[in-house]
Length: 263
Image (cartoon, rainbow, N blue to C red; front, side, top):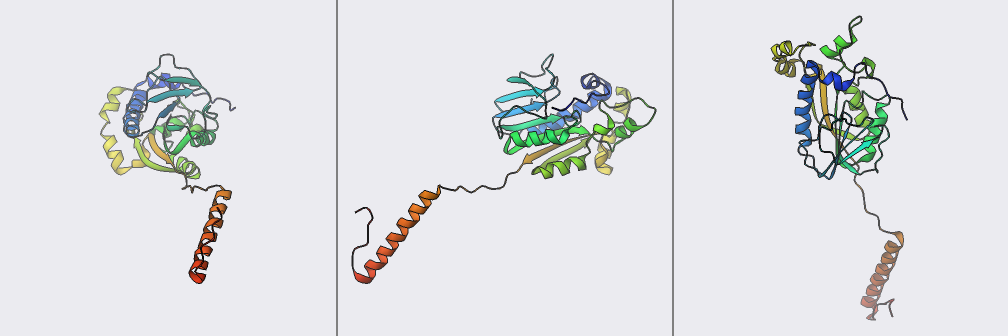
């Protein structure tokens, strides 16, 4: 089991700040759209127990799993499971939807987290992942020396989108949807964040890969399977068919009755 990677600032506390609320609104809007049309029976949210990223989904069973128990659950979870994301305690191919909000940044083994996600998802199952973009104004501010940390996770823990795409491709995932957001400069006050809200539309048009946050939806693809019947049944049917064909040919030639192995 991997050792937890301690954040610079507690994530829940950071989400209560003005920049945190800004990020939360953007992510909630994107995730709501991505999970609304995801169908199945079982949905999981991995991490951030005080937020409900499955509220727009209509699956009958929605649960939370993570290393921290929710103090005040944000949703009426059908179940709460305490476990490390690197080792999900579920059967293979048993979950239809997984939401992973900033889950890769909180792990020292993010690729192992994705492998577990791939293992438990059913074929054509969906995973929704959010994360901080290191190639943004916020990421630049976070890595600037002699300044207080800006984001709740260390800079080296952030997973860039090109890197995430490579990992997903390696695990046979196809990215269906993706959004960048939070193009505003790194301001701490809601007043200045609101004044620069126009940068959202400008950023989407002129520098779409420089948003502070990305949200990605990917689908697990599995190669088509061919149903193979037991060899003894196939062999018996083939032998019987061959005998009947031979008997019919002999009847046509000699005018005799075809051979019947049931006699």
